[in-house]
Length: 139
Image (cartoon, rainbow, N blue to C red; front, top):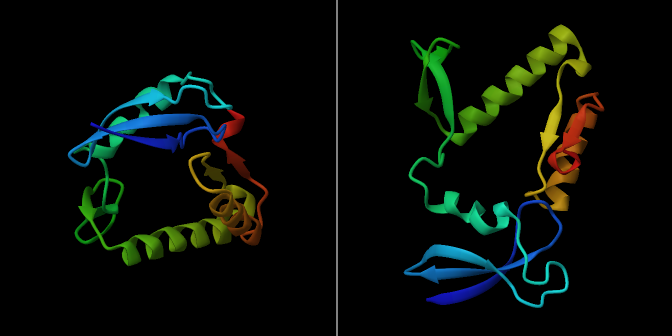
């Protein structure tokens, strides 16, 4: 089994972990001994958070709930292209802001994203006219 040293992607602390890989699949994660951030300790997310990588239930394509070919809360989830999903989200955000004002929307970002991604995300919501943006690390 191959051991690959990596940085845990969850909270942004920078804990080091060793991924144990066999046949191009992660089999387990263990804390990196002697690392200056976590010194051989990991939280539950670090120890078990990798399991989603190979899950057959993991979403890999965008889905929109549709009935008779158009969005409907009563419809069934249908696979769509990324272009259609982006246009759908953008149009719903735009119509919500037009109808209820910019403070009717909010963004909730993730510590699993890079600093650059988080910066771009908050910038988008500032452009849309709201300061309603938060981040999971605060919780």
